[in-house]
Image (cartoon, rainbow, N blue to C red; front, side):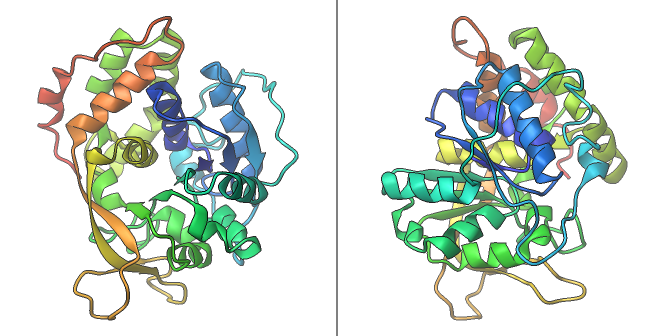
Length: 330
């Protein structure tokens, strides 16, 4: 997992661990929502919260390839996780190996077995490709949270945040030739909205410290989303990418040629999806265009409810979905 741990990256890490459906070899951090150093600290805090400090963390790029950092404190707070866990003292130590070198080592040591889940700007992966191009043929799958193909952006009118922060890196990754690259854009992440019904379910089924953390970390995020979109909820961007990697049936994808704009006053960082093959280029990305939001929230709630539980729960009752479906998805 490659993260710039803000609010939704943290929830994505929690989903991955709680799902029990993957072997997390390590987590790499990169600048994005917050500085790389803050993202690393936040990752340590989340792993400490869920009793998984055995998962190693590797620090990565502290700036985009050629641009200055662009943080998103207005959404994620100054600390990146909505002011939660402020009193927690970090005990875990960062690994000495650089993030992109760890990626290279794992992919080349386990050819055809490694899935990269990328919920941040793509700087670390671009650096890995530059240093060891052979990883392209040896990785099993890459799942990226990023872009907006039919939607407006969330940082500019046309660009999604992860692509906008380091479009040069995104362009390199999308055009590197990966055989199995899945893009989870705003088009689907905006259809999985965490609301008070879901928080209520967590309060009933999850360990108290998990439920409290989720409520605290998403509080301001929900308020900002309501101000901008008129719905008291927040989009589960990164958790959906994690769920899509572990449970592919939660999304439906179509293969298109996708590229990133890197040189435009108005459209820098825009994700350009060639729906009609007007460019005549080879399709390179499986683009998620639909999502089963009920299935996603079942995965999400059950995974978080399993964290720190003495026994895995069998199922979370989702009567709350009947109410959730009545919420306008914006």
